[in-house]
Image 1 (cartoon, helix red, strand yellow):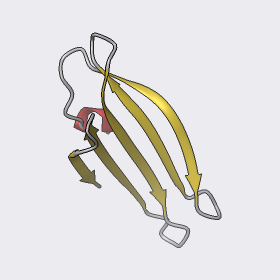
Image 2 (image 1 turned 45 degrees about the vertical axis):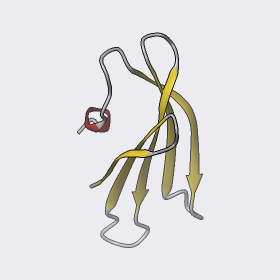
Image 3 (image 1 turned 135 degrees about the vertical axis):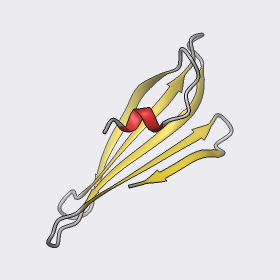
Length: 80
C-alpha cells in the first residue's frame, strides 16, 4: 500500500524529501521526513513516516505516519 495516499493533501501539493534517519542498534527503525510544498512553492506542512521492524521473531513490521501543518499542529496520525 502506498502510504502517501493516506495523507490529507490539497490539489497541487507535493512532497519533498528532507532527511532519512536510522535508529536502533540494528537499524530496525527508519525515519523519513518530508516537506509539503504547495503549487506556489511554499512549505505548508511536514510529514514524518517511520518503518519499524521487530528484531524478534516473527519480525513484524509497523508503520507510523504523521502529518503536521505549518504551525506544527498534528493534522493526521495513522499506525498500521
